[in-house]
Length: 111
Length: 109
Image 1 (cartoon, rainbow over the protein chains, first blue to last red):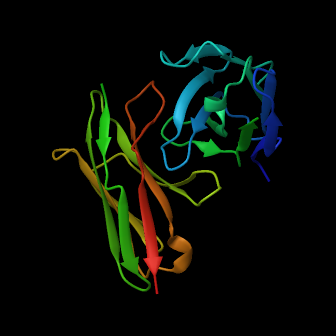
Image 2 (cartoon, rainbow over the protein chains, first blue to last red; image 1 turned 60 degrees about the vertical axis):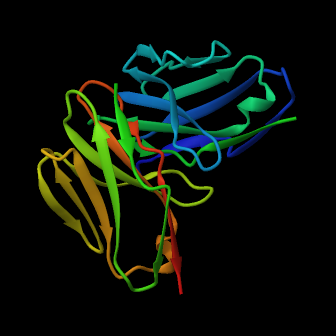
């Protein structure tokens, strides 16, 4: 089945220790997104790619970086995680922009 | 800018009908989407309205009125498994969806 896959599902890291979250898709969608979602809040868009074109939201902290080496894969790098970065990180894809397909998410815990 | 308003919480009885409203302010409006998210899960796409009127998919329907900048999600024959958060999201063309803050629906027996 075509899908959006996120690994790992749960990630524990230490304060200040770099961490990378990964996302892959078998949908062959040209657009990929990374969202941060905290408890009882809406998903907050961090950045997105139209193919290789990177688009950063204005309020995304510099601590967050992303890479998309090919159509199928996208990575979220958090250079120096703080306690406030503990959240669910959601990857999504779309081919038609009005519909997004989300992965199961990676829950990040910062100790 | 863009903004969406939806109720933060709604409670309804199993078997009943519930309507979750969404009003929006945006430029370049194309359509309104709805997503469902269970606790600990990812958002899943429910519906998209690009035109005025009602779209029906099984027990769920979604409505849009462009002139009123208003839409709603209607859930019929409520089941306990429908307890979740529901997000409306505005699509404005060549920009990503803008999500509302979500409505937490609790279905009680």
